Amino acid sequence: MIVILDSGHNVKTPGKRSADEKVIEAIYCHKLVKHVYGRLCGVRGINVFHLDNDMERNGENDNAELNYRVAMANAIADVNKRFNQPVILVSVHLDAGPESARGASAWIAPTASASSKLLAKKFAENIERLD
Image (cartoon, rainbow, N blue to C red; front, side, top):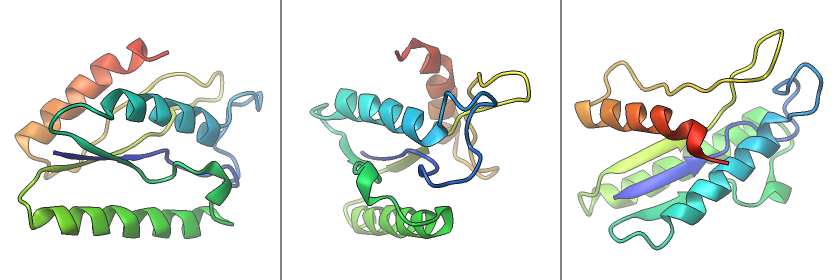
């Protein structure tokens, strides 16, 4: 199984932070993804990729960064289709509201498979366990 992890937005994205500016989505998500990456590395049967492991490499703008991440994820998935391995892409974002920056959700494509739906449910149930 291939797991591709993405930290969502980059540090140069306008907005994408808590109302009090104390939590910047890119930095928090990057830390969270690094934690998950560390937990998955070495797990038998899982090959894990972190698309934006180098925060210094972040693009000049969100669109350039998004295009880079999409191209990388597609390249990884295309290579692994030849080996008939399932590929899972997890892009981590924060939920925020006008009063506070808290919460998490798991979103999947409307046409997602039953196994994708189960994975999203398990991911959502366990988000709060990660420190």
